[in-house]
Every structure is written in structure tokens, then in C-alpha cells.
Length: 383
Ligand code: SF4
Image (cartoon, rainbow, N blue to C red; front, side):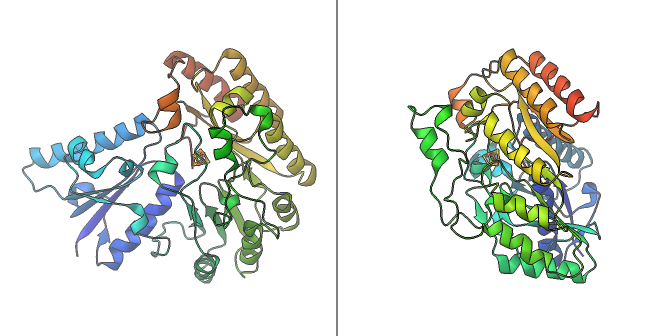
């Protein structure tokens, strides 16, 4: 039986994709090996969110090449997938000559059976890609536009998981609370970005990419449908964003005991000036307004967040506003990332990376100490 080794870099979305890539390999008669030196094929699921993530991919591929050359063995087939595929295939072959094939992750599809290690909790993708175009972010280019998985397919998978004994699921996507909305779409944030006469005060209260649905938001319906499945005791979701966090969703979390009270709500910065440069489509005040609404209705809610320090032009005053916001909200966990310009993104094109590495590190340490009580956590900037 041929064997495959899957090396996964980056965020939870990549880990979930790798479960489906393995499902595809097993369906084709492969078995998984934990040792790349013995594998017949090596799949590298890549992350592009920061230069250091791409450097780790390059380092791994060089190790593979060196080992097989030194031991005079035939190098296994190396397949590259994941976010680095935003680089054109021809360029990948030049940059990474060790790669034999590329596999766009979308080709595996949502519905390829996932092979999961955990038998109690399962990650269930409900959407992929993103339409939000935050200026620092590579995801809309690396994963493409936002695409929701159908409710029917999600419910079939969760039903199967419940029958296999899974008790907890986490619904996964870059903007889970926008699930099911893309076909309605108008882009207020795009309008905001393209109209340089608009200022931060002009940002609508909820700068969604979509019109508010006249009926119940589809994500709320999805939570209700999943809650009806016997055996599923806890439903979490990751990542939601400050836009499309409708009042109906807050109501649902409040009234549905199966829905997790931990809410991950990336803020990225506490400074309105920086939020505007990031094209986040909300202000410090509107972010805090959502947090306060949730806290007043769900007193046991706890919050996590993502923050970028050292975004171009971030002054000590901007950073202090982030520190103050972190203190005010009292996040249970904050994933703090140092800004790194990604080629192809608007911020890399428009703004010089002018905060020094030393200052980024200092700001990162201050926030990490504050939010994470000395446990260093740094992860890719987006889910
Ligand atoms: S940070 Fe999140 S919301 Fe913004 S573009 Fe990236 S994936 Fe989309």
C-alpha cells in the first residue's frame, strides 16, 4: 500500500483541509505515515500569512531535498497545496524546484470525507475564502472569494459525526457569521475603500459585505438546525467578525444552551485611524458596542481576539489605544501578530512597513503579557 505524509503549516482552516486531503488519499488506497523519509508522496499544505510561514515551508522542502540527495534515494513526489498557491504555478516551480505538482485545495472540496484524529470534537468547514479585503490580508487572494457550503451538506456531515459519537463541533470559516449571505451581496466596504472622500465617521454601523437579510440571518438558522441533532452537545464557531454580528445571533447564543459562550471576535487594532487603513469597516466604538451588547445579554460570554501590532504608520498613541481596548474588554485569549507585508496585498502596495522590528517585538510582548498572562501566543493573523 503506498503511503502519504502530510505536512500542515498555518491555521485551523489548513488543518481541517488536511483532514480532507488525507480522506482523498485514503480513498485512493494510500495509508498515512508520520515519517516523511519513508513516504511515497509528501503533501505540503502551506501558509502565506507571513513571510516567516513561507520561510518554514521552504526550509522543510530543502530538508527533504537534502536528505534524499545525501542518502542517494529517489525523492518522493512532493505536492504543494494551500495558501502559497496564490503564487503562479510557473513561479512556484522556479522558487521551489523540489515541488512536483500543485493541488489547489478547492479541488478536494468540502465534501471529501475528513480523516480526523480527535474522536470527540470535530472541525466542520462551512465556508471558505473571503470577500472582505482587509488591506493586510492575503486570504482573499490565496483562498479566493467567500463561498458557503450548503446547509444540506453541513447537516449531513454533522449528523454522521453525531452517529459516530462526536459530541462537540466547531463550525469553521473566515467569516462564519456571514454564512449563506454571499448571493445577496452588495459591498459597503468596497464602496468605502473606493471612495476616498469618505472618512472613518462615514463607516456604516455594520460595514458588511452584504445586505442585512430581511428574514432571520442564515447563520442563525444553521445554528438552530444543528442544535436539533441528537448527540451534539456543544457548537462553537470560528471565526466570526464584527460585521454581520446581528442582534438575532446574540439572541440565539443567549437562548441556545448548546452554543458556546466563547466568542472569537478579531479586533486587529484599537485605533480608528489604523482600522481605517486596514479597511476593517468598523470603528473602535462600534466594536465595543457589539462587545457591550453581548455582555449585557450573555453575562457568561468570554472573548478572544486577533491583534496586529506594527501595522504601517502605527504610532505609540495608536498602540496605546489598542492596549486600552484590550484592558477594557478583558479578552480571555488574544493572538497577537507582528505585521508582515504580504506581496499582492493592498497594504504592501500602499504603505511602507515603517515600524521597526524592535518596536513590533516590544508591542507584541506588552499585549501578550496583558492578554495572555505571559503565555506567548502568536499565530497567523487570520483563521
Ligand atoms: S482578515 Fe479575515 S476578514 Fe479580513 S480579508 Fe482576511 S480573512 Fe477576510
